[in-house]
Structure formats: structure tokens, C-alpha cells
Amino acid sequence: MIAVTRKIIHVDMDAFFASVEQRDDPSLRGRPVAVGHAAARGVVAAASYEARRFGVRSALPSVTALRRCPDLTFVPPRFEVYRDVSRQIHEVFARYTDLIQPLSLDEAYLDVTANKRGIETAWLTAKEIRAAILQETGLTASAGISYNKFLAKLASDHRKPNGQFAVIPEMGASWVETLPVSRFHG
Image (cartoon, rainbow, N blue to C red; front, top):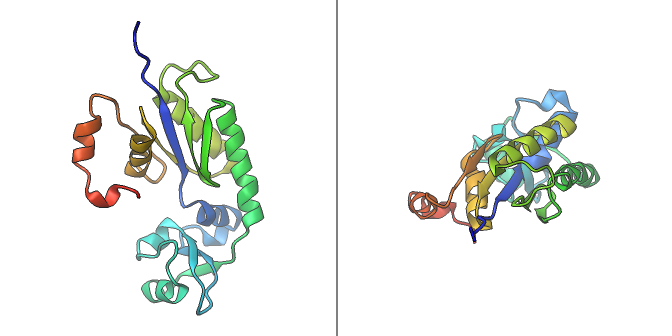
């Protein structure tokens, strides 16, 4: 009997809250955006890639964020909108597999070993999922593909934004050895 290698995809939306805001307000596109409140005690909930270039990240105090990026535009969070978009994304996932492990509004693990569409490779499945998300939400996602969740998560981070990367069994350990310790979560 031939052992079946699991096919796990980690899908992670790119700068999710900030990307939703940029999608919904064209004047924010291409500009550094932070979702959160600019008040003295405010905190950045999410940052666009344009803001990240200045070192603006989630959980950063708003005062520090503005110091790093004086042109930063703060947008108040719209969690109901983010939940609605998340539901759309999860509807896409459900067309490919019932084995979905949501991690947050904007990321999940999908076991596509026996996917509903009969797609032979996890690579093509991830590509199709990302294309469907883009078409249906106007937002980009990154995907990591591997034979376990840990490596799939590392792989999705490896090609952000709007990319995908696969870690196959033959390269697993040797690929992990090349990564800096800062890439490991936990």
C-alpha cells in the first residue's frame, strides 16, 4: 500500500483589514494606511504594505506609528465588514474541502488531500482558491502548501504578498534549516 502524503494549504489574506479599506476607498490605494485609532492611546490593528515599509505593524502604538510614518492615514475598524468578507472567503474554501481549520478572520488551514474538485495537486488547488478569492472579493491572498500545518504556515509567509510557495517532503528539513529563527512562530 502506498502512503498518501497529506496536502495542507495555509491561506492567509494579505494585510486583510487594511486591504479591505483600500478596496472600499480608492483614495487609500497606494498610500500608507493603518486600521485603528490615531488617538494618543490608540493602537494599530492592521497596516497596509505601504505602511509596513516604514515599520508600522499590528499592535504598534498609534503615536509611534505616526512618528515612523507621518503620512499614515488612520481608518477606524469596521469589524462587521471584515466578518462579512471573511464569510465570503470561507465559502470559497468550502467549495474545495470540508476540512477547514479557521485561525482568524483572515487565515485558515485547509486539508485538500482529497479535495472536492478532484484537483490532482495542492499547488493547483491553492492557485484556484486564490484566484476565486480575488475574483469574488477583490482581495489578494498568499498560500503555503506542505504536508503539515507548521510548514504550510512558514511557506505562506515566504511568498507574501499575493504569492504561494510549496515545501515538499524531499525539501522539508533542509529548507527549514535555511530560515532565520525569527521566522518561527510561538
